[in-house]
Amino acid sequence: MTRIITASILAALFIYITLSASMAIFIAMIEIAAAICFLEYARMALHKGITVHRIRGLIAALLIPLAFISSHYVAYMVLVLILAMLLFTALEEAVNGLDSTVYTMFGVIYVGLAFSAPLLIRIEENGSQQFLLICSATWGADIGAYYIGRAFGKTKLAPAISPGKTLEGLAGGIVSAIALAGLCNVIFFPQSGWLLVVGAGVMGGIIGPVGDLSESQIKRHFGVKDSGSILPGHGGLLDRADALMLTVPAYYIFLALAGYVS
Image (cartoon, rainbow, N blue to C red; front, top):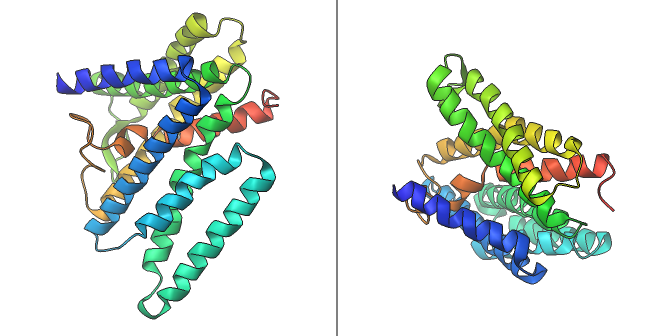
C-alpha cells in the first residue's frame, strides 16, 4: 500500500508540473531530481570504498542540462570546463590512482546527459506533451513487463543481473508501452500523429529495460540493493528514474531524426 500511495502522489505531482508549471519550475524539478540521483550514485560508490568527488561532480552534473538548453556554444564551453576540472582532479590524486576521478566522470556523464533530455524536449513546441508521452510509454512498459512476466514469463532475459525479467515480460511491456502512450496521446496530445506514439512505445518497451538493467548492474557492482531510501516503498529516486534516464534521451534523438526538433 505504501508503494502505491507513493507512486500515486509522485505521478500526480509530476504530471501537474510537466503540463501546467512554468519552464523555471520544470527546470527546478529536473535539477533537483538530478542532484538527488547523483548523490545517491555517490553514496553507492562509497559503499564499495570509492570516494566520488561529490561537490565538483554535483556541480558538473547540474551544469550540463542548463548548458544544453542555453546554446550549443555554451554547452561546448561548459563540457570543456568540466573536462578540465576533472582532469585537474585526476592530477591531484595521481599518486593514489584514478578511481575516484573515473567514477566521478561516469556519474557526471550518466546523470548530466540523462537529465538534459527532459529540458531539451520541454523547450520544443508541445514539449510538455511530448515529454509526458515518453514517460507514459516508459511507465507502461514497466507495468506491462511486470504483470505479463509474472503471468507468462518463462524465458529469462538477463538472469545474472535481474532474475525476474523475462522475454515474455519484455514483449508485454512493448505492447503496454504503446497502449499507454496511445491513451496519453488521445487525452493530452490528440493532434499528433501515431508515429510519435509508436516511437515512444518502442523506446519505452525496449530502451527502458536496458536502463533498468544498467542501474541494476551498477548496484550489483557497488554491492547495494537500493540506490537510496528517499521514496517509501520504492527505494531511491535513481531506482525509479533509471529507465527514464535512457528512454527520454533516446526519444529526443528519435524526435530529432524524425524532424520534430526545431
